[in-house]
Amino acid sequence: MTFSIDKISLSRTISSEIVLIIKDNLLRGVLKPGDKLPTEKELMEQFGVSRTPVREAIKILEAIGVIQIKRGEGMFITNNLSQFTLNPLIFSLIMHSNNMEQLIEFRQHFEVLLMNMIITNGQKDISRIEEVYQSQEERMNSDLSPEELADIDLEFHYAVLEATNNPFVIEIGKTIYEIIKPNMIHFKHSSNIERTLKTHNFYLELLRGNIDFNSGTVVQQMIKNNEEMVK
Image (cartoon, rainbow, N blue to C red; front, side):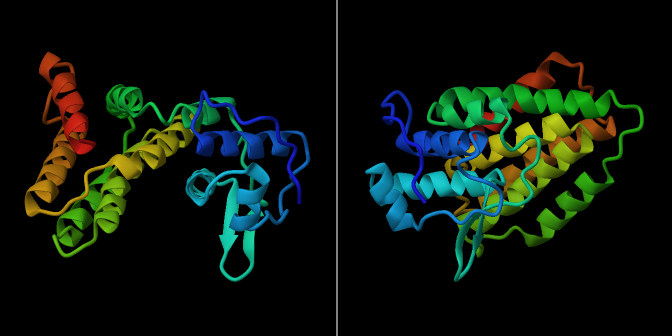
């Protein structure tokens, strides 16, 4: 399969350009659900780039549900493309993912929004969030790899997303976390794990109503927590 490829722009990262090209080919019907993609080596040749940006693009596309990797068979366009998968806003976040500082700033205020949405919902159910937190207390230990600890950390944030019951917020949030994930702290010492659990417990106390969300210091504390989590 040969893609319809315009000249790759140097204003974005190469991996972001590859993601955009595949998205455009989907929108134009060159690619369809179920189609098998070229191999990694073939993509390198078609795009005229090295292996690294191709792999980065594949990770992004897999994370947002555009492609599915079947071991021993190859890469395929998923048959379950959702209405959000090709959402311009989602792809805008991906295209700007190289500006990590501003993305982190956005995440800081995004999580304040999440807390506010859940707290102001009179029928809020945080049982799943509490369950995930208790599981984290049991599972997080210094013997796990940085990747495993990052995955366990994100389980909490995904549970918070789901508690908003807002599909737009959930899809945007998942994309933000997938983009930020490689830059998250690699937990190598117990102090990092303790800080994560302390931050998650702070969020829980907010949701339980034990901390006044309207306090001016709460938002500042949440932003500070997020800054520490991605340094």
